[in-house]
Amino acid sequence: MSSIKARVEAGFKRFESALGVDREGRTVWVWLLPPGLGLVTAMMVLLVPGISSGMGWFGQLTLAIFGLLAVTTIASIYLIAFDNDHNQQPPVEDPPAPGHDDGREMPPVRSGHARRSG
Image 1 (cartoon, rainbow, N blue to C red):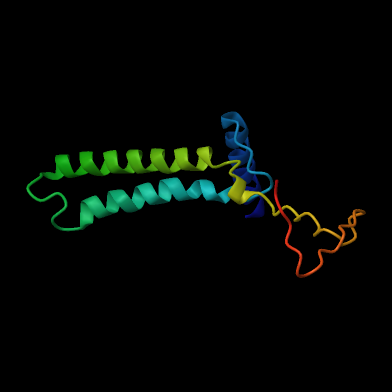
Image 2 (cartoon, rainbow, N blue to C red):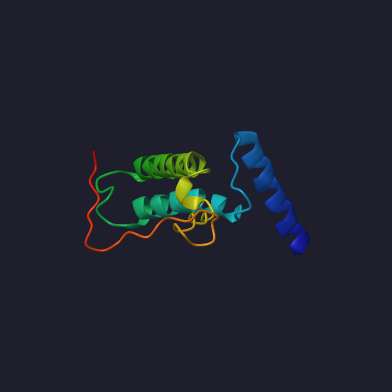
């Protein structure tokens, strides 16, 4: 079972490298989300009453396949577009506060004296 999982993971990594996507060590299993969302959309078209009322089975299947492909494509584009998003980067350490072990000492500001900007 783990060899199948490893092969699928390697396939996703090859897919990412072919697209030029660098997910920087994050899981490749997010690529199951776009087709999953597409399948949910197709099932909603087929099973929820009123969405495709008045259509025959051919029209319902056509709409379901269109929904599957459209939603899968859009979700995949979002995954590709946000491959190197700054919100997904590891946190960067904040620079040290002035006067706190950073090698620079700031002179203390005396209370009661306001600084003038010129």
